[in-house]
Image 1 (cartoon, one colour):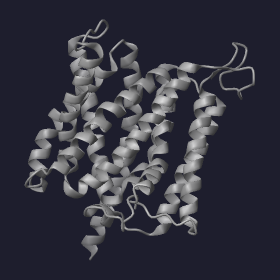
Image 2 (cartoon, helix red, strand yellow):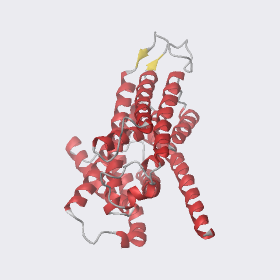
Image 3 (cartoon, rainbow, N blue to C red):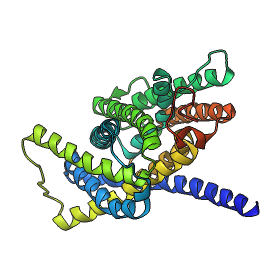
Length: 351
């Protein structure tokens, strides 16, 4: 009994500590990607190289540790799920996310994913994977929390996209005389679209893990498929593979790819394992840490600034996030039970 309790405690510490570490890694990676794109590297090239590095690094681990968990045969349904996860999670999400970083800032890019729990709730509700009773307090709190997240994101986007006159401090409360920066507004829309895609992808991953309970293998396979899809997109878009690197040597590109692939692969695999153990909403509750770290790193390394209006929008978004998470915690559903087997309409997706 004592050993069982100790094992549970160690697992909880590992999950919580790992999820915090993942947020530090995501924040550092956002700042790093912003710097790399400032050197003129195409966002599709970044996706291809870093995702292929993820596949190369994770494949041996997946074969060694998870081969016994692979399904005996890949059904048509499972193959379609893998292709959809690859397209949405690798090509579409990362393309939108990198374009958003390029037009806004790393801090904004790490703040937007805080919309994900609320959007996951709405998508799951629409797909009838999540029970919602308007007469229930917790269901109403989740709806209010989701609305707060959306209002916070919109407020943060609009206020982040304002520019003031040189006489005004960048940390001052925005005035009516400020002018909208449309590039930043478009960048925020890219980020919102990326988060919507990510939310749908998380729902799909959660259902796929029921048939394919091997998160590292899932990440490796979808990375390879994602590389092929992204390469085809670049070929259709540019009619060639664009690898012109005026400010980056081939050696540096390989190093960046291995670093990005390692960070991405480890983080995605760990998140998949944590989702399998505790559910996607629990894994999402640590995302504000990444935003705070990203703001600090952006100010220190890139010289970025953030105004009080954007900070207020972030606080509003965080408030809505924890409303949703508090309601889910009070509902008392088992995290493990909902993902250990294939989900059905009687089991809440976000538990």
